[in-house]
Image (cartoon, rainbow, N blue to C red; front, side):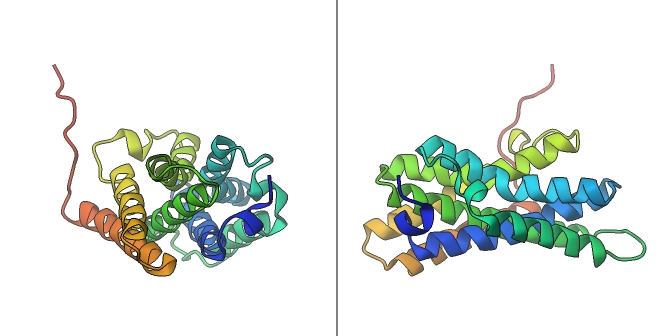
Length: 211
């Protein structure tokens, strides 16, 4: 199996690295909000940034995962987490809108990257959309588990649904003949908009009722 930069498109690789940066910062902010020390911030930033990509690569058979072969992933994740820790406000209060915005951006970038890479590896559009979703939500799930929280994707919230919708739009746009960059932009914007609107308007999926 060829390395990801050779097998997948430059667009997928660029989105992967951008998502790594954004999710590392978002994970670091979540760690700061949870009153973790510098080591905890670095660990949470690293896990949030790379968890989804590693899960995706394992599922498509790209072993070892690209994030473990390419030093840039680790360097970017740790640098972004460390910089976020150093630039935190003296009061230590992390604005909610900042965490939501970074989370939505990371979710969108990884949904795009995961879908693009799955398509580049010759997988069907249906499986590509699922792997795009896994890539988007994997890091956030690990983040929540490490913070002893119920993962976002298990709550009644527009999160995994946004990633899935973005992946579907990307695949559908490609099927309609749109250029890869335009299709990726359409998918990413769809995911980002749904996530932001879901938080803003308190959109929720049907949940179980307590007896």
